[in-house]
Image 1 (cartoon, one colour):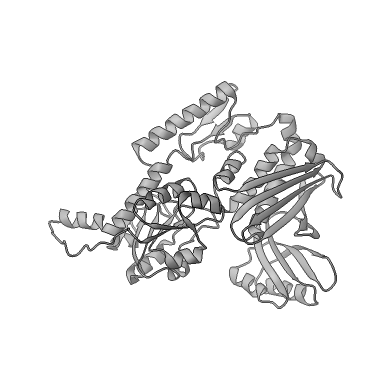
Image 2 (cartoon, helix red, strand yellow):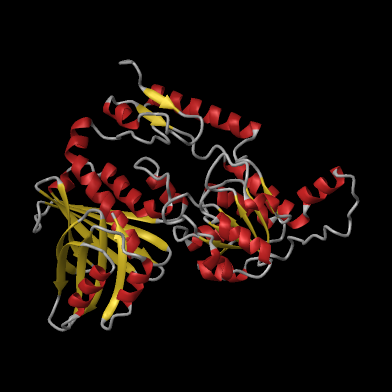
Length: 464
């Protein structure tokens, strides 16, 4: 319809909306990503208590006509350590409620600042430290390639003996086969899943285990959550139609169409630079610095800022977009600093992204070739000129003979085809950097081999 202005989704998923067609017609598509946070948090705590107190098993025993009081010895939450992986909306609500049970709460989330953690009364921890200390582990991260099989045999082995695991986030984050084996061996004392890799699921080896409990994806299935998302989307639509205020949109531009047309090719460049910087950095993100130089600095760069921050956050947040990227960063306590200069540089327009973490500073810069093709032109002060697309191997080494040859041979031996290579250095014999475009994913063991090559400073495989 030519009169359609907005589509509102009372929930999260918009798979049934043609976003490309809606955007082309100027139709704003909105959803309500936070309306079910309370319901999901309460469901998580319910699963946690059920695990600790053996409630489902004891109930089933009584319904079978038994009185097995001695069989279901429970464990207390008070004084135990709860490890929360992911401190977004739901993870934060879980943390607040966990404190009332006198649980010590450890959190792993590289996008949460120390100030945010302190405000919630939780302790930030590396993932390995969390695994080693937590009596209970609950997961609240998005389902992305980075989080798939996050909980698997190798990570379970790093956990305490007798740990209890809860996943009410996304299916596939927990490797169900590995979890099953750990439950059988007793390494994991109990597990509770509300989500599965394949849904609906009616048969699984897990279902036969006495120390496993499950629910059919009920995290958001409460009367209050359904009402909350309905009221929220209604208010969002009213705000847009009456005031032009856009909230929780997944596709809406926020600048005049003419400006958007000029910015359009740079949006992809900014997002790619953000993704690259995020994957090159290490540690807890504290600040994002963006610099726009040259012709592009004369435009309203708000959408470009949003697109770049979206790229920075994307590796650990599957629902981040241009509209919600800045609020997500603010919620996580990440500062965003933007600077602009129309003064001429070596390029007509240049975008620089600098990430400051508690462990390092990472800087990348890029431009467009022929106003359409993204190019990486700088990494941490090293000048390069590489195609910014697809799979990249980025490594730094001491500038000595033989390193490039060894890496090329190693990639070839493992069937990884090199599509291009660009080198940069500041002085002979000092540090150098290489950006290698590859056609194939570099297996983890191969990357580890590369890192062990003498004179390699670091090596990372990234996808942009």
